[in-house]
Length: 164
Image 1: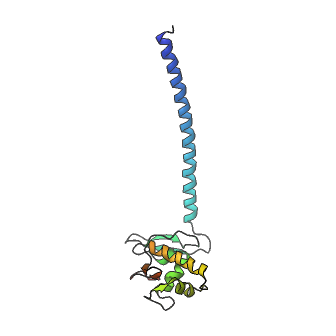
Image 2: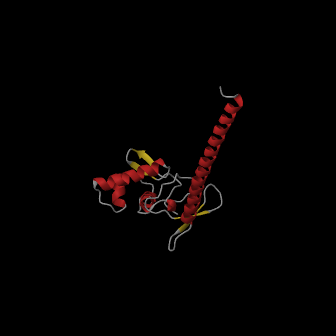
């Protein structure tokens, strides 16, 4: 029959080995986490720096100090509209739609359907092109940049003109 002290020493040894293994796993997880933090910070710094020849836009949101950001490029995320946010933060295709609806093409205040919008931004009114414009207009409406008067009919709400 084993002694009580022998059993306790055996369990103590097993607990110490488990604790050492968990500490090693924790150190490894912390190292991985630190690499991700450094990568995210580095990418943030790189993206915040304007590249040569790139337009930089100052944005003032809700009376705060101006923030300088790069002008959006194709494929940029459409931000939710906030007071003081200019269409210059939108990707070029979205800015063209805002410009047309806000009066850049002589249509100020007009409600337009997607076929008219496609033609106004210089696209052929083919179903695929119209659907692309519809998708962009719906995204702008969902994020507060445009108003959808009725299904497929869009306009710029008062105070959200196409000026930068």
